[in-house]
Amino acid sequence: MATITIENGKVSRIIEGYGFEVTEIRTVKGEEYKSYYTVWNRDVKVSLGDIVTVEGDYSAKIDTYTDKTNTPRTKVSVSVNNAEVMLADAPF
Image (cartoon, rainbow, N blue to C red; front, side, top):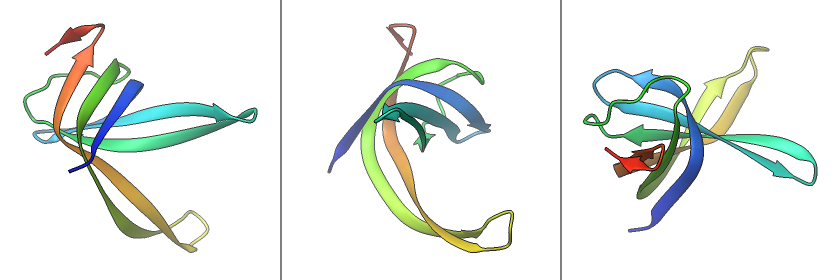
């Protein structure tokens, strides 16, 4: 199985009892892009705004949704399963 490592991601949402969402910000050719990852690990305790490094099993699925202008959209939802999470250079 493929693994993924997210370095210096910011915790942007807590999913009570299941895990949390991490936002990674990258700059490419002067433009800033955000990527969102759902981290499934119910044993890790993090807070909104924490900066974390996450490593685990990569999985992705295609989701559809309706945006603010009522236009149907498609996105890829990326998840990190069996995740190891490190905060401030200290593993949990």
